[in-house]
Image (cartoon, rainbow, N blue to C red):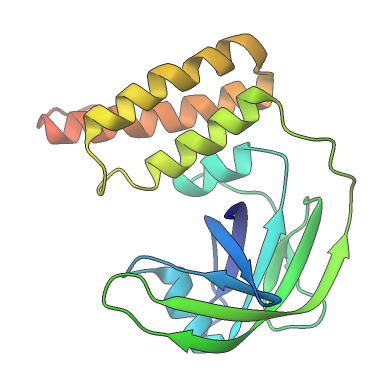
Length: 191
């Protein structure tokens, strides 16, 4: 099973990188499998640490993909790293094993510290739709645009029926990314 999360990592100079990431659990370890090239991969290999941030604010997923502010960052509690300040919970991770691959290596990380900050109330359909579109946007250069647009059309139903202001804002940012990608493919200038 893959869980959609927000991963925060830092480089050797302490510059933070925050991005949506699907993770899985295996034998008590968090497994991250980034496509190469990946800033997250480079940061974790350089420092040995990362943080899994769990949030129900889907704007964070959209913001990270669209170069918007994801919110404030604070120092992690037990590792050299940062976490989002406004999250439901976070897990601080230490790299224990690396399996290289030309396309998608695997990082195996041990949870060294975990904190719960707010209760999880559940996702509505619009939140799930935004997360699904965020996954598609993260693969704009890997998936056919036609498939992304078909999925977007279906996901729009949930947005129209159940979205609140946060979900509408996040959805708009992601739609803008898809439109810009489509324009770039058609050699149009949307700037």
